[in-house]
Image 1 (spheres, rainbow, N blue to C red):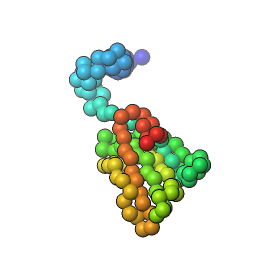
Image 2: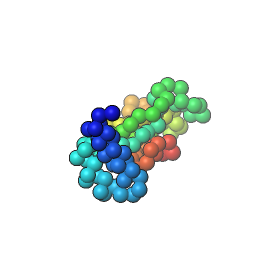
Image 3: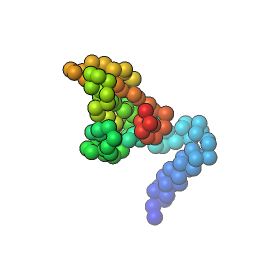
Image 4: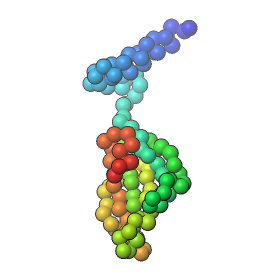
Length: 122
């Protein structure tokens, strides 16, 4: 095996190992030079269409929120306040919103970035 390739692999494994040992500050300074800037990516539950009392019927999966995105759970309510539809995924510039009017519906957004799949229980 090529010596530069082995050196690069050992540095990469060292970066991963130092983070797992709780040496994140050291790893971020040294390894960002080698790997590029480290970003905290968050995985989010994704479902494009879920009706009350049912499982996800369209767009089920996982998305990865980038630095400027967050995990979102959106709910659309009928005018009388009953839940009509729920959707989940990644959303750029995500912000919490309470019951804004959209035609004859009210829409609520809940956003998070605290942990992977944090939008499952919003």
